[in-house]
Length: 370
Ligand SMILES: *Cc1c(COP(=O)(O)O)cnc(C)c1O
Image (cartoon, rainbow, N blue to C red):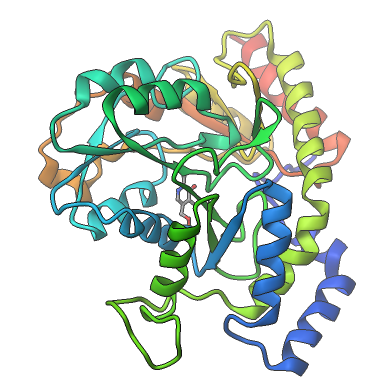
């Protein structure tokens, strides 16, 4: 009998932190600081120190952070935003909420990240923004991003929703350009006890705009300077995130150790393994392998009690919600192949050594029987 290994088990983290979290929640309740307030302000400072950036503006989701980041750029209606077709759909929502147009550029099949060498061919006179995604916790090279953005006069918004603890050149991703968006959705590497997100930036006016926009377009109560949103963060989320942030580095190191063991164990198998970008410290939010035998492998793992997932089974250009863009299968072949072949293995810091060994044994047994 092999051990059951869940794809993900968030309850283990919650139970190990229970006393600290319960104490933090009691403080929020006793101060009735439920929306915005001192716990959010404190977490903003802590996260800014952690990232090494000037400003963190906490909001109610990563989707809202992306939306506000684009709004703060004050782009003309119909402007084009170049992004990747291999991401979670929320990468594109903000673009659409702002009346802008997502323009996809295929991925580098080795890394699964946007292929910056293909950006030039997608630039038109309407292109204004480059929106790379630090997918799975890997890093899109900021030096190359800078060159490509400068060559075409583009601003850069980094989708860092999966990139807590991801470094490039020793620096946290997310604040090397105009702005970056993090998500604190419960399943992310740093997650709240509900929804949450943050816009990070070194630019004072971007931060000020995001602070106004998240709070009904107002910086002085009941004076509304512009059309705003209710995108504020809950005090409870901030209090939980402050407790968890203290563990983040330790959790990322554990993720990297699990990835190292997977890498080593699978090196001789005919699988595409995650490739850490040059200069990057991958944070392994997800450990995603690729194989044309994906569905058979997933079935084999399931029979051995090993949970898996697919990130993501449908590339963005083929999502029904974006059918109006008029794309068809074959438009972005690398992304389509990735969608058909990707398989996410169990990857969370609380995995036991026995569970890691079970995953390794189950994946290896699939290849040995063939
Ligand atoms: C999770 C995620 C988002 C959206 O964040 P939410 O907090 O769920 O709104 C955006 N982009 C990527 C790549 C994500 O993984």
